[in-house]
Amino acid sequence: MKKTLLAVTGLMIFCISAAQADPATEAEVKKHIMDNNAYTIKEQKSPGGQVSKEGSLEFWSSGGLLQEVPPADEVEEFDAFRIKPKHIRVITLVPGKAAVAMYYSEGSIDRKNSAAVPNYLTRATQVFVKEDGKWKLRAAHWSPIASGAGTSQTSVVD
Image: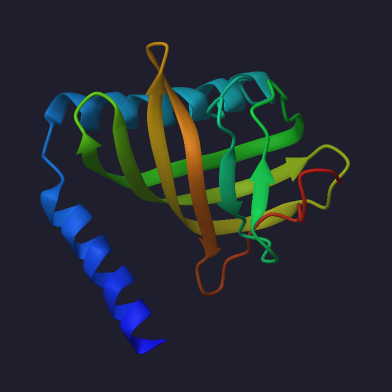
């Protein structure tokens, strides 16, 4: 078990250290996150088509098991969405093709047909890949920050 853990940790360190800084990729991914957030605030629904054609593996801030999110054009609707991404940092894995974004997300959220979360405060890690010229989500991990709350959503199908 220790050897496996060391091997996985070593591979992660190698991948991150081998990642190339690419200001263009970093700017594109940050803009993608901010544009999606602005759209959701304005329209009170998420933009569709954000998940990779391969789907996405995600841990949500509500806790629970790993979710397999299909590559559907599903749109989430909100009664109120007042989330703001902050302190976005991006690591380029493959320039123009793959990147990891890490940031804080805070505010309040009231997803239709779910419990409202007035003190939404999470850390986000998202893996993006570029498909057909657009950044798509391939994996994500959201975790609440102490004194904050995550979403009330617990599965792909509520």
